[in-house]
Image (tube, rainbow, N blue to C red):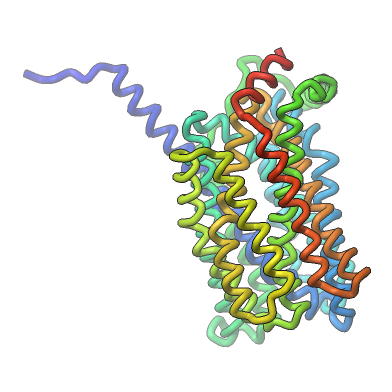
Length: 439
């Protein structure tokens, strides 16, 4: 006798398959834009800035210039992210804004290839716009997380995104390193031309692998569609209303301040590690190898932290990562050998993806899904405001003390205070407090 499968089972199966497709398509954006974070922000731009864009400049001064460039791009995100997030929530514009910023970053990455030697001002201008595109798109990417995953899977899905980011960024970065090391094999004139071509490959990679999110991730929309101008007005009004209520969200504010502080150290190390290694005399090739270690070890390590959070507790896993980062920072300020830099790179690889992905998923548990982009705007404001303070602090301390070691050591204070504040946060109580305040 023929067995009839109930329609509800088929619908459930179809929903599950659509959910999986949405999750993997969403996570692939991390694979796409991490190429910019690795090849441009962490890898070749700091090296190229010192040796090419800022040729003949004092090493310490170029460190300060790079720090200020990172700080300026973060400041722009601080000023615009909450308002654009509120507009995106009201008008269901998260995907549209994501791609607007993404393609700004893509265009600027390609444009770096056309900046000439010694033109450090133009290099900084293009780099700042590229960073704005990268960071701005991440605000709306993060805001889509509650739309494509259930709360119980936030850690797993967020971890998948960061893990794919490490793998994808690492694969392209490895290719770019090979291009620089063996330019003739790729029919390139020299290492300088190879770096410029690398900037273009980042743009192509970022654009190509963004397409799954564009085609297969559906943003939840209100039944009543409203225009862009009306969305802007309503978004502004809602942001003002939220800001008036946010003082009552003491638990959420406590987490955001804690996150602001400890992620400062993480972002600063990401952005300034290569520059710091060069400033204390390490060979650029050794630094590139260390970055590759971070990428490929970071892939399984991030998945491990997602697993650890599900079986242990998300907050405890974040605190473990902060403790390891504090140790890394203090060791970095006194290290002498390149072998130590490699060991630090391994330690960073073990925790970098974990602290980023779990912070995102932990925060997602505290906020209503219908306010996701707006509240992730606040999240990224504080995260990027921290990225203003960290690189700027490194630059200022380095110039004031005439010591890059003192500059990197100054970052440790953010890890210490951030951990102390995070220990006082209870995600469930915060979520209840936020909903009660907004209702």
